[in-house]
Image 1: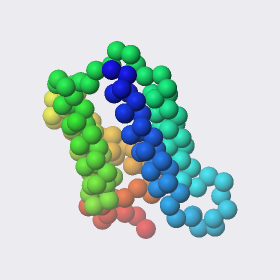
Image 2: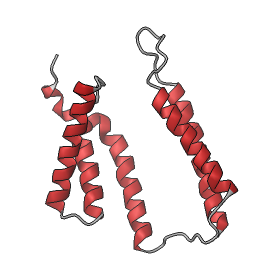
Image 3: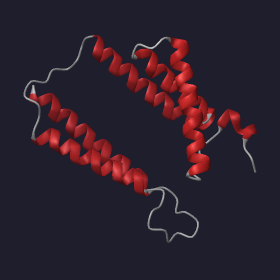
Length: 150
């Protein structure tokens, strides 16, 4: 079953290269001479992903089987939720899309839906406030853009 890890490793290297290339396409910040720009964190993530993928290719798990049971279905659901999250981030905004994504993932992990979506809403709001006010990094508000303070 080491073949599964190697296939996954190759796919993840392709993803790491694409993600790293996408990070280099981000626009330069105003001033342009900062050592840490908008591409720094995505590039770091792509390097970590590439190194982890190489490890999977070189040293695969000898007893690895694809999870075709309920676990496999839950993994597919999680991937679909994360893809939808990325697609809805701009139109719905960070708070709403994060509330929906985190709430759905919590629910799929066993939480009751009202509590799961409450956790999602609180998570989205708290992370937005930290990024916007503590870190001074703008996140999209989308449908909630009427709350934006000039």
